Amino acid sequence: MRQKTIAIMVALGLCLSAGAAWATPNFVTTRLHTPGVEKTLLLPAAADHSPVISLGPAVDPVSGKMVEGYAIIHYKDNQAKPSGPGSKPVACYGFLAKGAKWKAVEPWAVNPANGSGLDGNFVFTNLTGDIANWEDAADGTADGSSVIDILGNGTQTADVLTADTASPDGKNEVYFGSISDSNTIAVTIVWGVFGGSAANRVLVEWDQVYNNAYAWSADGAAGKMDFGNIATHELGHSVGLNDQYNTVCSAVTMYGYAGYGETNKQSLEAPDITGVSTLY
Ligand SMILES: [Zn+2]
Image (tube, rainbow, N blue to C red; front, side, top):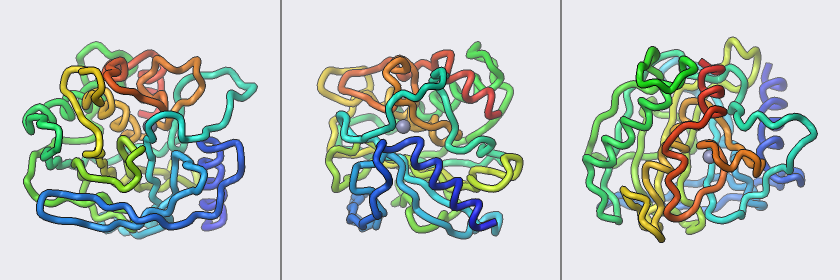
């Protein structure tokens, strides 16, 4: 059982990362700043800027299950080195692992304090709307009628939140922080069961950090990262979708690269809708 899980984990990494084999993980120190508090988190990182980093196994405090974590890193520019286009037709959607989805509805919390002057209510409302768009699409049509609650209800908080890299803590947390690698736009961490039979796979926690080193905007302003653009993409990981790197997929929300002033990821495209509806 353990062996099978590990084998699937490695296969997942390979399909998302460099054509070269995984480098031996080294440890980098990432500092995440929340007002008044500085935390140092250890992220196992692939030396080749692989966009998906395994965080290893841990016990989920909610279910008691053994789960695994992944940090999905969004580098600015093309530092990540994903696999080239394969010989298979490109669907422009894919999963963290087939069947790995939410099976229980949990709440989430955001500390919207940020260094870009974004209004906290905007951040909260935008995240809520982005989640609603994914849930709306889960029935196969983005028509405004949502039939499934995937990520639950959110709350705003001034509490210090922590993205969990060592083990899940049962809380789904979103905040702005500083990340030592200034080329990282945002990180989504997802904990779940990604191995074994697809029917038994499950997601149990998601955390997100948006890098305060970037200027963020609410309106697609030039020279800034549009929050809704990046958040909609990151929330795609929270529901269980992976990154797409083939350039024929450049218009979809789950395309793995993003740039300043970009807003096209705010709206879900046909492959994004097919992806979430296939999973749910
Ligand atoms: Zn991504």
